Amino acid sequence: MYETYTLNNKAQVIFVPVEGTKSVTTLVMYPVGSRYESEKMSGVSHYVEHLMFKGTKKRPNTLKLTREIDRLGAHYNAFTGKEYTGYYITTDAGYTQTAIDILSDMLFDSLYDPKEMEREKGVIVEEIRMYKDNPLMNIDNIFEDLMYEGSPLGRDIAGTEKHVLGYKRKDVLNYRDKYYEPQNMIIAVAGAVDDKTKELVKEYFGSRKNKKSSSKSFKPYCFGSEKKEDRILVEHKETDQAQLMLGFPGFKYDDKRNVVEGVMNTILGGSMSSRLFIQIRERRGLAYMIRSGSDNFRDTGYAYIRAGLDAKNINKAISVIKKEIEKIVKNGVTKKELEDAKTHIRGSLTLSLEDSGAQASWYARQVMFVPTIKTPEQRLAEIDNVTNEDIKRVAKQIFKWNKMRISVIGNVQKEDIKF
Image (cartoon, rainbow, N blue to C red):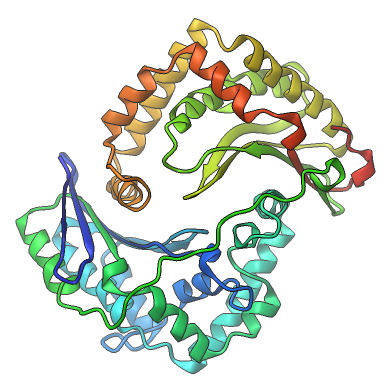
């Protein structure tokens, strides 16, 4: 069973013992991401994440820092989203102290050397180019830009090349100091944790003081124009395969309807036996990849369907997708589909949570986004209670054709797409 408490500096801690594992994951998350940025500083959350690996007072350069982690055979990385940034190290339980020492050193005592900061701008510019050159990786970006046009939630997490190259060191440090205070930390430790682990967290994270109050403010979302001609975005690119993503406004992170939506999406496009997989890929051969899902934020969310296909088949695929959605809206799903979706979700979640990193991530996000922590078993109990009537009701609330957005990357023109 998990245990939560708050350190004297107001950092939130959650311990998650996992039986049968010899690993420990220490994950530190901050409630800050790209939607918290001003337009001028677009992408800076992601930039700060990179800079945490560029040397500390104790480990003054990248090589010394990463070599000390690499010699442990550890898994480590960081990630930036639109509403959070996270840093983690997974090690053999015997190296827990070293991992916690390194992670706290990075987060509290990174150097932000001016030369390293300038050099890293080039790295991020190449990362931005990598995503833009790869339609499979970039389709999410242009879809969210369309869905949330006019709000920071629609901007690319990495910013633009111009933004990145224009950062001033003083502005970056001011941004970091605004959010990277102990009182803004969520520390999740999962795996082979014991009383010694808890003392280590207090020693390395609890001894640091807050220098100022941390901000948690962000601009509210807004949806882009609902005019039909404004609800489609096509990025023309000479590719052999087009990427299609269409979606609808959905629910915020802690909305109870997300449980129903998750079951519905499993049936619609969440597996190789789902309706869209069978109808789009197996019956008609229109696409290799087809799936449905959802993404959720603090105050909004969306449901989506994605496909990779020949540009000439886009309209056929949209037509089939609409028919399958309309069937669910009108009739819901079969008893067998409902039962199988629930066991599919249970099996997938159980397998994923055998990893200490997945356990740490689950509970850290619970602390960050919902008022009351739900264990995986509590979530599965909610899923077991989903009915066909629930699915029909939620489908009607989500799938409204006059609110659907469509984004495409490929060798196609906007006027050729019918929806």
